[in-house]
Length: 572
Image (cartoon, rainbow, N blue to C red):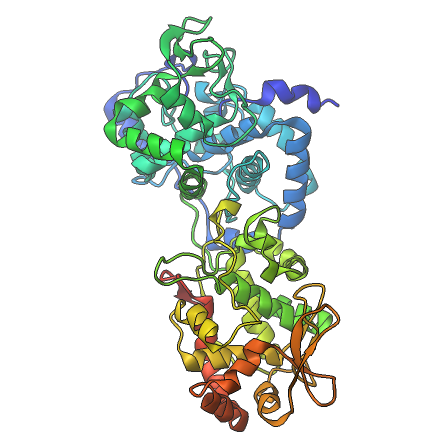
């Protein structure tokens, strides 16, 4: 269709590297420049803008953007649009930054660096019309994030709350974006002004893995990589491994060509090899794509959030949404299991694993581990809540949902802290085998839980979460509930362990589990281990006799579980 026809044109260079030839340079006396900068309106983004952002249907917008990117292959130019909108920020004067001022004629829209970006703005206009409550600046930022993810890049967080510029008069002076003909010092001047560092400079330059330069826009021509629609670390590999020769584009602009004259690099790209600090990072990213994706995600998130106020997420609303879900779907047990399996991979020695929503990636990694079979149900139930509150990490929502689900089911009130950070790529998953194995005994439980910084009382208390839910043979190979009311959080699990007669049987899936005298309830070998171990059994007896003692220990242990490896958390 008409959009599809734009695809080849729309792959513009994603970074704001534009040669002086395409800029009208006007020399302004220094004292006037200072005066003009000072009179720029500061980035007008307020707590109200952040609050208003949570009423926008983000999940639907994201789906429409995904469809647009797949249909048009326009992701390189969508990235360039968001980049050039945000990359004008000045941390000292608090001017520039993401505020969609380019939609006003003249001003920044007319800067040479932004030549051709009308294509990206026009592509997004139908989505803006469909969702009038979204600001242009938020839409442009999200479009770039979706474009990067769809093309194979990191799954980055998106925090809404950008306000749109009211008129062209909020444009900043030309020349704030990087100049493609300059070297390392110029890059530092530009990026440090925004508040970014050397790691940010090199990681963000890697966005050149997408798109190509167009001589009618920048005066340069050609792609940086062989596959300009794929986001990966090829840019760094090519920078290091190909032989680059200084030549020129057909416009006469200086640029480097590879030996076949099929790919190009700009002077500002080659600057990353000139500078020893930059070069170390180029070498790291060429060798380790996961490290690159994480650093790119951190730097790009910072870039597109420059100058946005931190606004607080509406946790009371999130709580109400989770409570409603739990009551309607009776899904407390699987919500607890999801958060538990997300967090329970933590290893305090290597400081790896822990709650970071690695199961979001469904093709590989933790979502494919046997212990997580069936958890796609819980992820699906929570997805509308995840979509509704984009400023909150997925791992925070999963953990918070489990805390609320426990309370709604009659369990203890558990202190909750926010601030978990999500993985950005499936490769950040940990190896299979870190979660408890239901066929093993007390020694195995100690290995698993001590690794997370737990003790015996924590192990017994957390095992008491089996008071909720049932086993499903299509997920775990076991079947049946532990208690007579699997939707009620109480201490019945411990009473049943002690009072009922448990017999080892082979279930219909061919696996061994314990059955009580009625045949209605079951226990796993790892449950029975608690009454076979001389140190754990007295704790079971205590919790069976004293529900308040169980609740107190459980609340403390569960908080420890869902905070594993997260030293940067903050109270609600």
